[in-house]
Image: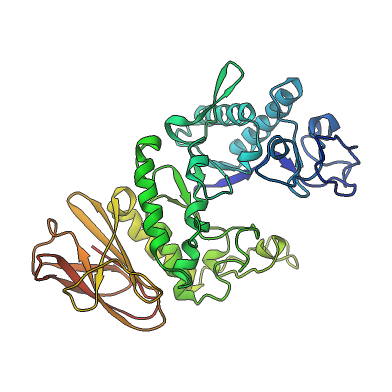
Length: 422
């Protein structure tokens, strides 16, 4: 089984009152809560931390490079002797866990707040160590908590370098989290669309923006990790996706991630319907029983868990859902006049095409039944041919031809029904 862990250039556990960043003033260290922590013990050295207080403005340099993220204490990861010692220690610690736990990748936390040299050295050495263990596909993706393609381009693709003096530094990441998809860029994010709080235009715009970035990054969709929710409250005041959402809506949302462009990342507990709301602690719901140490509370009988496993199997066995081009599809209520959906009551549909095959994915956003006709590729489907349900339904639907020559299938969907046809 693949295991992906999280790392960061921050550490919990220091005593002493919180202090705000102020003109790069350095503060006294205080002490650790436990004498035997952190491990490795090298990290107990007070000179290995910037000690500049908490960040006030997360987009202001050098504050965002030197300051603490709330209670997370920032390592001194500058391009100097101490920074080199810090980074080398972190590399060795993470190499240990790759070896011991058979980890296949790391989520590099808060990468925007790391120095470029530290990021480059960490990623390069971790990847090289993974290679020595036969892990040629070791995956490193960064958290850049901002809905900004220009910022992503600093870390991915052909423009992924930064001048550090006379040196060119490459960050060494494989991917970043797609906050623009999750959070949106002025028009609501994926979660808002799938819950019917926002219209679908933001998803159309996201796909078009990816197309425009393809030459810069490489294959469209290859370099972004998609997600619905996570442990951070700053961008999701309504709590986790499952908060207030019926099971069918959660299943469809995860199904969207698994079937659309990008590398799907499911935050633990979403597949269980966890619905934390409030601060970060409320969204970090545990999956273990404190009263019975070692007891795992993963519920494999959960409806959401079982249904997304079925969708995952469809994705794994149908190559268009992994490698195909993506197109959002026009819909029609009468089978003659087609257009892209808008508003809050519609069928959201897209195709993944890997020549000569097309897979159609559709989701009824609203709380009522819908009977929409959905466009499919006329060059790949003959009039009178059929598409069969791979998930969410049974049997087949007939491919029909509109008066203008467009090909379509008519889908009768229950509220929040998610289907895949091929």
